[in-house]
Amino acid sequence: MDILYFAWVRERIGLPKERVETSAATVRELVAELSAREDRYAVAFSDLSALRVALDQDLSDFDAPLDGVREVAFFPPMTGG
Image (cartoon, rainbow, N blue to C red; front, side, top):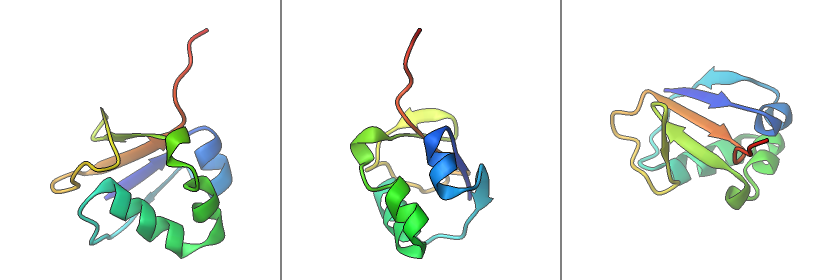
């Protein structure tokens, strides 16, 4: 599965994207797996209320199932201007 990071999430993790193998059933479980890897992931995912997630380019939530998902994107809430 491809994981994409945008804005400050990318800055904290230090990668724009990566490919991961996961046994996670939901986005929340994927976040837990990533957070356990290294401190930089734990910091980036420390406050899920400050993050949004999209599955295969559709806005979703952290309890969404990952079955069949090819791409997960994490980003801060979008603001207008």
